[in-house]
Length: 137
Image (tube, rainbow, N blue to C red):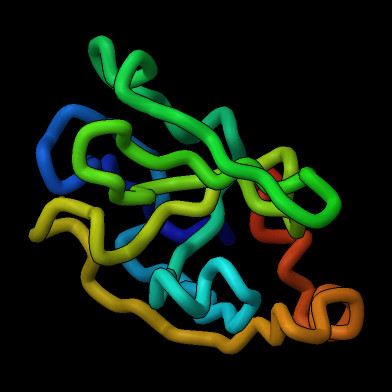
């Protein structure tokens, strides 16, 4: 049975980037220690890309950084520098939403799981993270 979903809204610090995402009110978030996530203290939950929508003219305020395999697309606001979401290497068909960038009031529970980005392939195979961006039927 699929968990009840709600519409979460959020964005960056300066509010130039705004989005909405349809996801459960209780989420599993990933605390990753890859070189990028670790430096940003990024904890995120992953949704299918079709459940995420940029609002208004947010796209014009985004820029993207890639490294390594260049699969992950680390988006951030050109004005304030905040990564409120990005396209993860583990789930290129999904969006990773930064939990601290979700507006208050819709997340009722956040279960934190560890993703060992320093040992990416092993963690990818062991955690089941790739299923997070699949639409539940």
